[in-house]
Length: 101
Image 1 (cartoon, rainbow, N blue to C red):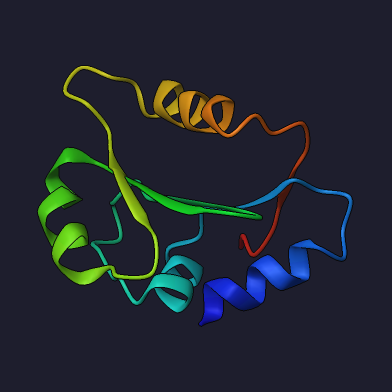
Image 2: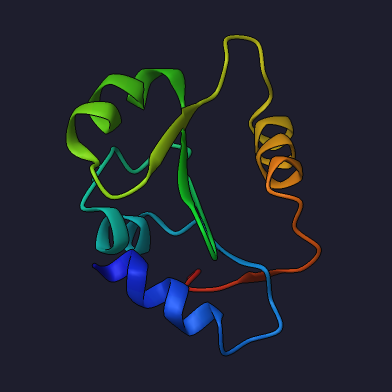
């Protein structure tokens, strides 16, 4: 429900997506809480929401997150490369980064 609210707020902007990287805000939107050292990123676009997780978080995220897709970082893949790939796959032109401390 919270992700749907974020998608509705997105319609009022010129952005194509929200990028959420603060762990507290990811927990708020997905209900998933990981260790404070975890690398998590939530990308919410008009039609989709995807949580990018490290390999160590993949099982827990898959079992606990029900309101968005889960995309794990592959072994040997750099987190930034995974994020760039995820952004390119949804063909975004402009991302509004929000809710980051």
